[in-house]
Image (tube, rainbow, N blue to C red):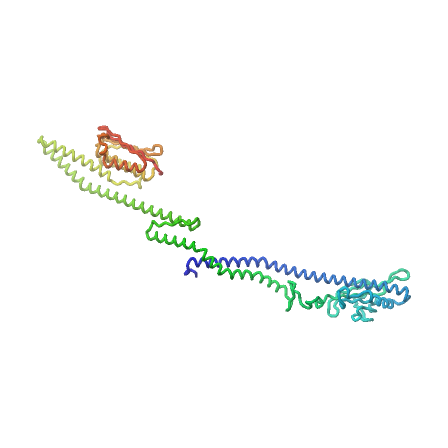
Length: 520
């Protein structure tokens, strides 16, 4: 979907999407954690409200019992006084009626609730007939109490009166008789209505919401409060999500600028290398993943450049070997055949001049010269013969070289070849030095036997080529050494080794080479 846009734009969009996903995850976590808590808090609030209602009912019940007790006590005291002074021998109803007028002055039901009309008390006979009440409009004289309230023992309960819930209580009205015995002459009844919402003050009749204010519409349900609280949690996340879109896009564009430039530089260098420029290098601009990639690119470029140089060198070496092979083949096919033919002619001429004392020595000298030339030619061909180390290793290559000289030239070569593990350049140098030393011995010394020793000495390799040929005086030939000896010295010197030549006339020649073994 975003593939047609640049990397920078895609990364900016990715930042926005990741940030938005983080906000949504946080909101989901908050809702997952808080919604159960809100439900639990709402349940606790409902339970608290229920307990408050029950506590209010218990309180009103207690107030009703107190009002009944207060009324019974006042009525009993006044009835006892009336029975002793004013109405001796009067009936219980007359005593209650006399006490009702006095109780009306002492007990004011409205003072319990802060206003008239919230409570009422009544005095009734033991059979439930009312003889007095306050206010009298609720219990007219001779009206009857409810059946559950008619008893000479204390009772209480809940009822509906005038369409409202109320708490009621009864207490017996007792007086002390002439014999000092107390007896019940009636019932004190108290009724206490539940608090009317219209009497609660300025917000009368309005439901009170959970925040302490009043609602003007229908009463809010608990689930409405839960939804409102969830909305209060979601709203900040929505605002943050909306603000995050431009901020995240701007941050993504600004923060990826340097990264994009580094990637473009890396892409450019890669394209240059793909085009064949192995000299392309990158500045390492940090220690992060891009920096390590830049370092890896430089390392790869250096290795490719080194590989190309090695390939060129190998190609040059292969070309030289091919040229040596071609020269050796040409010399073998042309010069060797011509020298062989000339040698045959010189031998025939020597035989034909057997009677001529004057020309015979020249013919013999010509024949010997041609034989030496042929011997040197064969030695030179062996020296030019390419020998590789890849197939059999250094020891086998040297052994094959010795066998070839023995077969081709008829020279006995005693060899002791025990080389240590050598680095590839050292192995190559040892092979070429031995090949050059054998060729020099054959061409210049005319030896009958040659001894070759290759051994390990204290982390170094020692090469000794000794022949029993004519030898020479090194002091007399100083500065006139052949090209072969100079090439050997250069080759050994490049590897940090030494080359010594020991010789004397008619005592043969010894070539000693000492080279560091290097890493095998």
